[in-house]
Image (cartoon, rainbow, N blue to C red; front, top):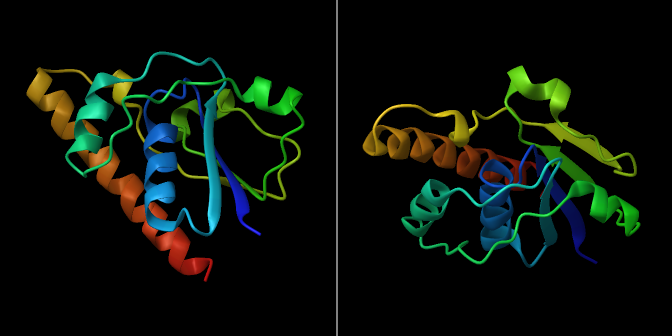
Length: 141
C-alpha cells in the first residue's frame, strides 16, 4: 500500500506544488501525493517555468484548499508543511496526520527584483525542495 503524503503551504501556488511534483516524479510508485493550501491562490508562473527546466510540467495543477481535503475525510501518513519559518503561525495543520513535518522555504511570491532575479531566487527554492525530497526519500527506505 502506498503511503499518503500531503504538502501544505499558504496558497498552494509554489512550494507545495513543487514538493508534490518532485515526490511524484521520484517516488510515485511508493507514495500517493497531493498538495493544498490554506488560501488557495493562482499557480505561480515562475514556478511553472523553473519546474519545466527540470523536465516536470505542472502547468495544469489547480491549487486546492486544505479544508476541502479535511472535509472529505482524507487521511495522510505524512503532512509536510513547506511555509517559510517567519510565516509558520499561518501555516495550516492537518489534524488527522500520523506524522506532521515542517520544512521552511522562502515564498517565491515574496521575491523582489527583476524577472531574472526572481527566477534565480525561485530556482534556489526549487533546488532546496528537490534536495530535501531526495533526502527524505532516502531516510524512509
